[in-house]
Figure 1 (cartoon, one colour):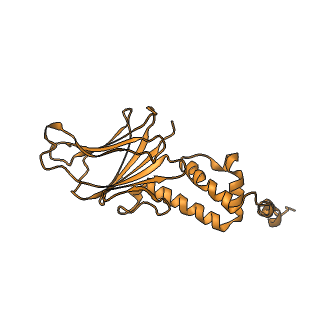
Figure 2 (tube, helix red, strand yellow; figure 1 turned 45 degrees about the horizontal axis):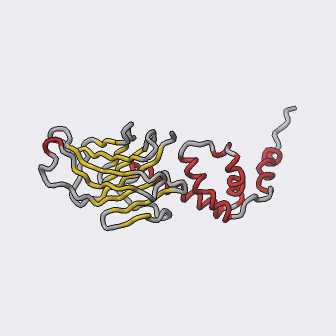
Figure 3 (spheres, one colour; figure 1 turned 45 degrees about the vertical axis):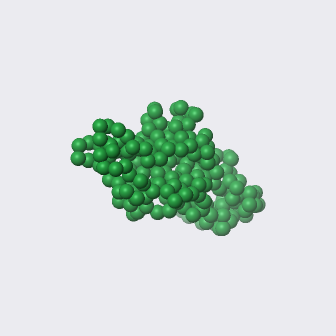
Length: 223
């Protein structure tokens, strides 16, 4: 006679885990959630990382902190993957702007400050200004709010004959081997590129209108 599996025995490990004492307070857990979400987004095996063992156990017990984790994970994914959004939207509300003016909004994403979003209100050059291969600078400034205070520069260069201009995005910091994943979103389209050895990402043939708002999202890639 074949013994049927005992459902109570199969559930016993889960019940023991839920009955185990919670190692963290909600305050201590929330202090770790930012780093946990960023590590998970970077592809790290957070379930096997002992640094997050107590946090994972706490999330098994606390619905409130689990909800916060899910919201942060969704916000980070939305900020780093604007191509999945139908149109340009404001930066996630959880991450407050680090700098804001009428033409520029800089938002730093996560506790490690290795990802950021920049919203720019474009002031395009006059017609003919890009002739002869000249570039037109749209924005250039250091970002002290971001880890390593990188220099961000955005410029236009002539595209192929009869095509929209190319957008060059440069992110340069003291770490010369640092590469960045850049996402450029307009109201009509989204584009993705990775910076080269000179710290420059090129977006080919991007239609733009004067006064249009674009959003750049950048994430430092593991070195």
